[in-house]
Image (tube, rainbow, N blue to C red; front, side, top):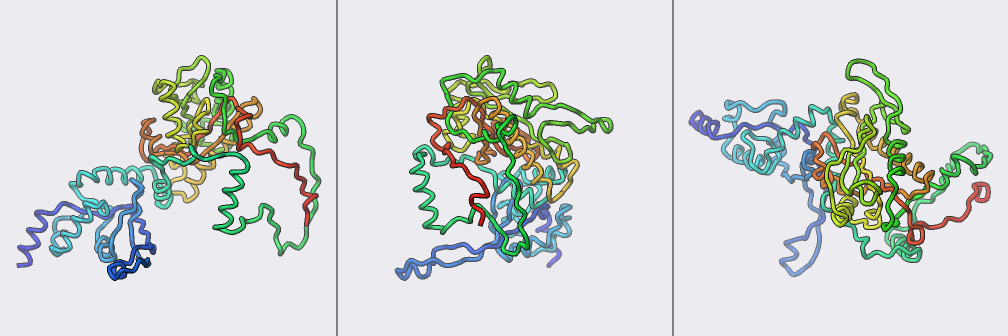
Length: 415
């Protein structure tokens, strides 16, 4: 009898396997206590929940403890044979079908709504993603996020009021100035003069949140910024197809996996639209032409509703090529951090270049990276936007968040 049951289940069942990237989160969520609610009381209780953190779609997929135990019986590197599937009970088989339809296990054929999972995990495997980094990347991506800054006042008084509101909720912030109580000695340092040449540029670096939108940025200024920040100045060929390049910013392994994509809003002699800066040829490849209103709307969406950042004459989108970075640093726990640091280095170089040219600049990581990837037709899991620099003609009269600092000298405040 059991042989007949096993054969019928095996004949009807698709093939199953566990997902290769299977990270589970167990957490206590605050939920409404239904039993007390039905007695007329409103109360919350802690409910322990388990969920699979999907690195392909960035979703948290809930599953029970029993479903987790069943899933652990599946292999991750191969599809189960029919003979193995036949060993499951009808109840377990029905549960596996349900788990496949919820994206928690993989099946062949795949349910229509999860057809991308197996291919996505294969791509992650081929690219040598570290599993923790893949989950973090997917679950920190934004899609359709809109900030509330359109109605936010940016005067110094309003900014102070918001900070005081935070203080009431979270207490005092940690102090800016850290001193170790267990230090055995302190050596006083001379304060060097930083008042000429490069140091003037360094001190002039600042974040701009208002731009002169009625004036066009010169084409020559954009050329200079792109070449100074993203241009290639040197190359070292180690073998056929293997080379390291040199930019003005450092990069892990001299790989320089961050590409510059441009949303041009108002640049003299350049059509409004989307571009890719080709560092090998120092050329702009046009991807899409836009009207001025379209560019404004797209910029606002890219920067998650931060309307003051959307005013920039050019948005420079940092697109990480993970396949280039992970080719050398396969499944390396620090590889993903290195990519983000590459973007940070490039951002600081752009800030300093803009300050030297008398331009305004900013950097924001609060971006709708999932939406940007689709609009730029980036290869999922292989490329992704990780941040945006803005550059343009600063409007200091409207730049309310550009607060003026008071002079500070460490010796004046030594304890």
